[in-house]
Image 1 (cartoon, one colour):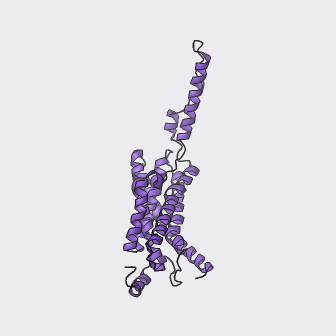
Image 2 (spheres, helix red, strand yellow):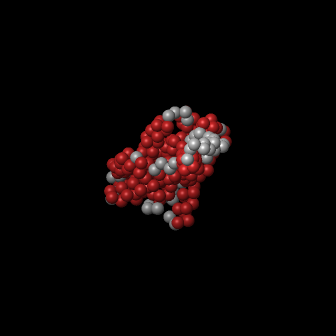
Image 3 (cartoon, rainbow, N blue to C red):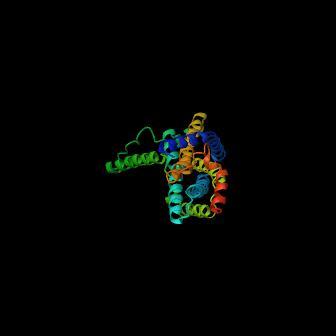
Length: 274
């Protein structure tokens, strides 16, 4: 397959995944609406569950796809491709893209009620002649520092799972590779991992959202979720592995979701893909 044919093949796959990814993004919006009033610890807990789960599934799909189409059983090569393909893409999908979307949407700006409670006084406190000038300046500076701190707190924060929850995320990638090495399959993990990725991205947005929920904000979140899942997950499951394999020209739309050829390959290779 030539580079041009491979590029056309990838574009066809990206188009074929649009409907399912959009449906997944809608479930992400539903998840956020259900948990929007939950405690921040719950939002962090959701991310700590869905992000490692996404990494496991992403590693399974990437490592499985490499094996099934490369017919390779080199464990170290499979481990490297599965690990970096899952950690890198999952971080992009669940952390970086949502963070950029949060920054554009301004979700970290507090609601009107919260902003009113934390509003700084419009006028400086009256100068008490009994208070030394340097003490008055110190009080004023403290007020400015407090305002700056509040300003900083209202910015979205980038949560990097493989660093902050390294004890969960990195072993999750290795687990996914081990599962794929023993049982390389792609159909079920790919479909599930698109949904789990959407929910992980939703949890990241929930962790930073303090703004009023409105139809406009929800529409923006839907777009962010779609982009966060569609490009990274398809890159992980399609583009990244195809850099190392030659896909069969007979495979068209959703080729990694079709395993008819894999079943035939199993008979020819003694069960590599079983």
